[in-house]
Image (cartoon, rainbow, N blue to C red; front, top):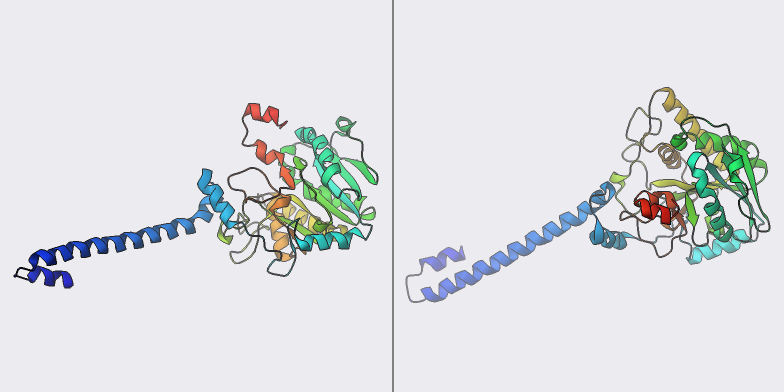
Length: 348
């Protein structure tokens, strides 16, 4: 209303009031610009998690955003430890479990073209996976002859090759590992070790992975989804699948690259996931994340007692949360983004 009053003045103050009007309009424009810009900035910021999950934000913007989002809480909402290797809590856990003379198994499925990864996996595990502790490598393979000779193992380390009949469709490994893991735990793993961890063989240990990872039921956070909004987690959304997750369920999304725990708990997990998987197969249903979908369904119903941070499952991607230390790196995931020359250089 003040602007209209200025315009009505018929006297010699018109020159001044016009100047006031111009200045007032300029200030008003600045206020509108500021408010609009702030609103736009907030809109972009709130949209980033969805764009990240869909792979629509790239380059420095993505990297900066993920660096800002990364947090290092040391406990889950239900009170389980969230493990960062260099934290005081991890040091305490290493001291606690290191005194117990625990025997641990590391289970990998090595079939088809995946045989090219096994030597690199074992060599890195000898250096970084529970160094100096009792470890048995269980290698389930359809071609045991191609695995020899591998590497010389250190003291208190041993390797057991578990032959499995070659079957068609090994490219769908995610539909076979859970049932095979359950059978292997039943005999011989269950009577030989205290803990068993299941890992993808196309990975490499690049920093120490010690007793801080031990727990009754252990899951690892998916590095591309850590810190994201729950709404973008790729849980199974088909209500006809036994892996289906309701909208209000789930606090985290876990990767199938590494998970483990007590042999008794891992047997329950592998058996339960296998049953759900077979029921879906019988109904002609394919879960969107294959094994990972059933794993996440199970871990919602049976919360892990120990959750590993993205340090324990990492690969070089614009979507991956940045961490100060990478401990287990997925070579297979990284190779997906390489050209032919890079794949040869990195032995993909």
